[in-house]
Amino acid sequence: MADMIAVHDLVKNYGDFCAVNHVTFTVPEGKIFGFLGPNGAGKTTTIKMLTTVLDPTSGSIRVNGHDPTREQKAVRKSFGIVFQDPSLDDELTGFENMDLHGVLYGVPRGERHKRIDTLVDFVGLGERKNDLVKTYSGGMKRRLEVARALLHTPRILFLDEPTIGLDPQTRNHIWGYIQQLSKDEGVTVFFTTHYMDEADRVAGEVAVIDHGKIVAQGSPAELKERTKCSSLEDAFIALTGHAIREEEANAIDRMRMMGRAWRGAGRR
Amino acid sequence: MKAIYILCVRQLKRYVRSPARIIGSLGQPILFLVALGFGLRSMFARAGGGDYINFLSPGIISMAILFNAVFSGIEIIWDRQFGFLKETLVAPVSRLEIVFGRMLGGAIVALVQGIVVFVICLVAGFRIVSSPYAWLAVVFMFLIALLFAGIGTVFGSVLRDMQGFPLIINFLIMPLFFFSGAIFSANGLPKVLRIGLQLNPLSYGVDGLRGACSAVFAYGLKTDLAIGIVLTGVLLALGSYFFSKIQL
View 1 (cartoon, rainbow over the protein chains, first blue to last red):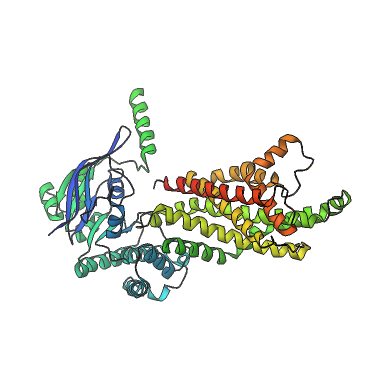
View 2 (view 1 turned 180 degrees about the horizontal axis):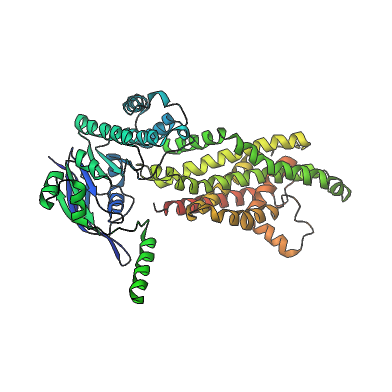
């Protein structure tokens, strides 16, 4: 099986701070791959580099065989993404959001409309597709985003904490769709999450990243075996420690935090 | 090209679906038209200026276009906060197409709003002199719309939140409006102000629009048109440049 994502020796520095530190991994085609790590470990930075919105400091990336820094269009056509935060236009209907996406991705009209109908039904929004998105619940918006990400039949689906803030029913539904999709259409799935039970259940393979470095990689069963833990959550804590991480939105926050830590150390 | 089209359509849909915004943005031009137009009308006539409503209306129409166009550019901040911007920036279309779609859509919305205000001015007593230039009124209105959609896009791309918005309105947009010849002419002004008026891009739009409606141009039709087109081109380029520098 070919590798859908191949990352070799990837580095991203923000000034002195190394957000992603010599990371290497591959995701074979059709796999559901979980990318796990505490807050600020480098997950979102890695996704940004994989999805062409951030250039790496060094190292190489291949997404569907293309280089995100040089073949942006080819890479962008290959993936669909569900961002950590919502990214819908609330003033448009579900259908219009999907339609706009389809036009941006060059899906011909006839095929576009047919696929929109199939996908909104698939995520259970068929009845509501002509309602404005601002009338949707959080779970419905998420489902619409998943459907939208699939509209242009991508080979890879990136999900950055797709189930954050959702109730267990909706989480179950969303993973149900994704697992079915991976099975039926062979779509490769790359996701991040903080819910270890989800990762344990759906991921064929996971990588644990901490402080910008991959500290473990393998199937959930292998990780539990290696750390002699009964759950993936315990294994995760065994691998990354108990310290609570500060959430950092960006490099500036990170610098502030370093400054704070530094001043604190000085006072002691 | 399809990306430009669909992003224009998006903005028109958002405009039509927000009656509060349509009516809200009519409030200010109507207030200025009624308060200044009728308030100063007799004084203006006594001073030998003619009908003030005729003088003022092109200024008020420009004002409506100016505010709407700038606002549509500033909407980038909104789209950034509500996340829709990301959706367009990871799509396999160039940033240039996206920003052109946004600016064109914003300009069309502003033009529509300008036409609504035009009609209101006609109701209030604004009269157009029939001349071979009359059709140019729409051209100048659209140039003003595009130019300020460009300016709005520059600020929408640079600013990260809405806190800088009042600053732009009070220290850039309001002065541009007041010192454009929209409510008084450049004749008889102190020299510094007259130069200020001549440096203001809106002055040529207002004069062009007024000239198209009255067949009398203060700066000359060719000057108005040439400066309008060049500046619009420059601002669209600047808007595109700053938009292309947006980091997610």
